[in-house]
Length: 243
Image (tube, rainbow, N blue to C red; front, top):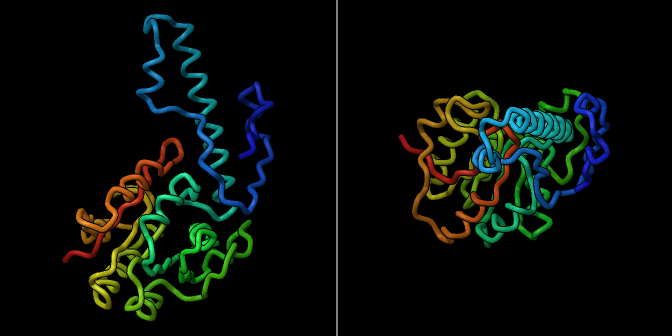
């Protein structure tokens, strides 16, 4: 993926960089901030003030770069980051299972799965269409709200995908409806945990992680390869409704 900040040497210039996200699935997330453990491991002398200042300067610059990129991807309709790094093992984990993605937005994840030959039904209520900056969907996304989608397609599917749902009870209602029409189907949730910026407490109270599944080692690979922006805590989880 293009390095939009390659020529930037002054941190203040990061604000003026023009970022245009192409309608292509990136290989992986461009990272500018290492984990805290990795960064601290580089310290030779914790009493060295100059080294400490350099450490925080790099951290501030990297954090701002990732924030700028996250904002640009959000403007392009991508919230949960979709890249081949984790989608490839996700495709292998899905195998021949039938998939429905609700609240699919522009369809970034569905688009990636379809490129790899996974037959996905994707729906969205297109409430975002009245917002600013978003373009047309990348792939076919049917105009249907999430709960009605599960009522219509729930019996036909093996996997339901909910990625970065709103901070209301919609994801909970969808999960509950899936259990009603097809209790054996799995729900793949991509988002933050309780207290984060996706879903609601009610959803997390009724979402139970699935620990026994087919191709479990491949799911571990999905989790290991999933990337998130600095300061955010989204992750993929798979589970079912619990009362």
